[in-house]
Amino acid sequence: MNRSVAISLAVLGSITMLFNITTAQTSNPSEVADTIYMNGKIYTVNEDQPWTEAVAIKNGKFIAVGSNATIETYKGSETKIVDLEGKFVMPGLHDTHVHLEQAYIADTVGKQMLTFPGDETDINKLQSLLKEYADTNPDLEILVAQGLPQDVFPNSAPTKAFIDEVIPDRPVMILSDTEHEGLLNTKLLEIEGITKETPNPDGGEIDRDEKGEPTGYLRETAAGMWAWKYYPTIPQEQHKKGLKATIAYLNSIGVTSVKQQHAKTPIAEAAQSLEKDGELHARIALSWTWKGPLEPMLLAEQEEMIAQRGRFSSDMIKTEFVKLSIDGNAGTTGYVLEPYLISKSRGVPVFPNDNDLFAEVEKFDRMGLGVSAHATGDAANRQLLDAVEATKEKNGVVNARHQLAHASLIHPDDYPRLKELDVSAEFSPVVWFPTPYMDGVAGELGEDRRNRWYPMKSLLDHGARFVIASDGPLMWQDTFSRLEGAITRKAPDGGEVALTPQEAIDLPAAIKAMTIDSAYLMSQEEEVGTIESGKRADIIVLDKNLFEIPPEEIHSTKVLITVFDGEVVYDSAKGPANEESIESEYGIVLDFSGENGYPGCEWHQLNHPRL
Image 1 (tube, rainbow, N blue to C red):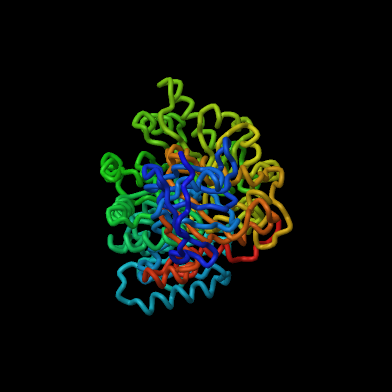
Image 2 (spheres, rainbow, N blue to C red; image 1 turned 120 degrees about the vertical axis):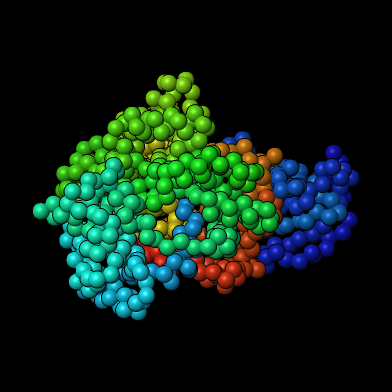
């Protein structure tokens, strides 16, 4: 093709103060790009062409990736030329474990319930807040609260007395700060018919006193059955409005693809509606909720929802995933091979019988549905690997892409099995550096297990695929804080002590985990995840070159521009440029900072104690 000759350079208007836009022409209209980005330092994550200077985009796809000279041949009279002026560019980021609705429902449900402040440690003051809430809401039939800091109570286990002492005559339900536990007062225990004779449900526990009487504290599936059923809901129009604002925020930190865990119909309908309006600015994979320990939705309703998943499937929305749980939280209810050192417990397995888990995994794999399995303890992670292996032995093939969600502890004997079985480890939430949470569970884990906490480097050495996610907005960390922590294993607020530094990985591996490997886990690696011809044009322009700054500065990186399907969906020069301005723009309160209803989000604002 003949090199086109530039005939007129005209400023079309700046999309940022940093970029110049010009026009040109070409003699071959079929090769004319809609947009060209040039003069950049573009990290493609494509092993065959890791770095380049420029890209040409047409109809939302890359039609060429190469040198400035090469890409200039794709200019036409209507082509928009963006001069990157040496800025660093990379593919859009993926987050394979999010709960999108939790970012915006606080705006509505927060008005229907009490949220305890995350930094309050005085039990008497917590009781005063509860009493005040009850007194100012005399017409509420059932009082609901969330964010109760369980660690301030003896044995990290509050009892019904905490509520009964201030509200003896009205039913009350409170969720703990981890949301895996719920506390009922005596009145609500009576309404639910929970007595000394009530058995523990599979995968859950009813705490009991020395006489065997229920204390009111419910764990895992017990919390789902009797506590979460009272959690407030929001109208469908709020889901759409909230999802749009949430994605705008994620775009502002470089995210262009997400995997919604425990997906349900309301979030699917909101995504589909936004797509029809041309306003869905992120690819979404829906991992449907299934037998979740905290799920009040009836099983028959879950079955029907999954059976009807195809009505939401599109180029933008992937529907072939399910989410189930195998255990609870590492250090407490996470299912481990060897007992915890203090409690002497092995945790709470949701599937005490391995055959029951195999039946679920085999069934969904046969349907082509990838299982995202909440697994924190090394026994739970082994359970999923065993189930996938048994599925492969039975059917001769694994049809879907299965995910160890959280994967906090994996036994070294199981490291090579991930590659053998094509199972991906997903590391979240972001506690792979010293945190208050790790401070609390270190004694239970002991040195050996703590030294293999979030084993990124070990899996990398065994050729296994892993991804880095958030589990957001709970215990939220933004994209570049996650990235930095994986490289330094130190807290990105200036921490000097590393947690299991032998598991630190390098920058290319961390970027790969948040781009192409995450795209693979979402069954879209042929569409996105790298910058190469034929793929969808999802890119981000940063204010720093990640390869030219000290790793300890990565967390301060800002996104200048986010391009999704070839279109600019976020421009820091035009705004909205942060959570507050996005809230103002969309007229909704988001909760990625922990100020409006999800106290776990406040974790990223704390000065983390050092181990």
